Length: 135
Image (cartoon, rainbow, N blue to C red):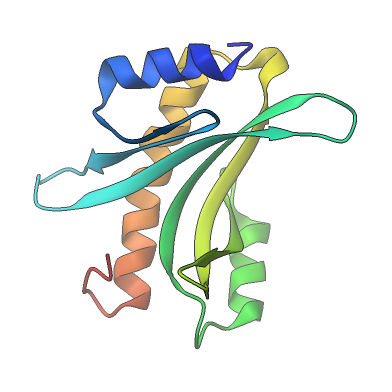
C-alpha cells in the first residue's frame, strides 16, 4: 500500500463507506453480537519530511471529565493505538488512533489494526459512558 487510493479501494471492497473524501474515508464496523457499531476513520497525513502516513482512528467519547493521567497511562501500556484529542462539533473529543507509514504498510496490517481498534474503542466508549453508546 503506497497510496491512499489503494487503501480506499481495499476498504471500500470490504465496507460501505460513510465518508468518502479525497484524504478521509470512514465506515461503521459491526461488532460481534451485531447490536453495536463503531465508527472507523482512515486518513492520510503528510510528514514534514514528505513521507505519507495512514491514520486509523475511532471516537471514544467527550474529553470532559477525563483524567489526563489515566489517558497517558493507557498510552504507555498499549501495543496498538494511543489516545488523542480532536474537535467534534467544537468540543474536545477523545480518539483512539494509530499512525503507520506507507513505506511498509500491507493489507493484512490495515485489517489487523481495524480488527483490534474497533472493538477496543467500543469497550472504552462503553466504560467511559457507563455502558451507554454516546454516538
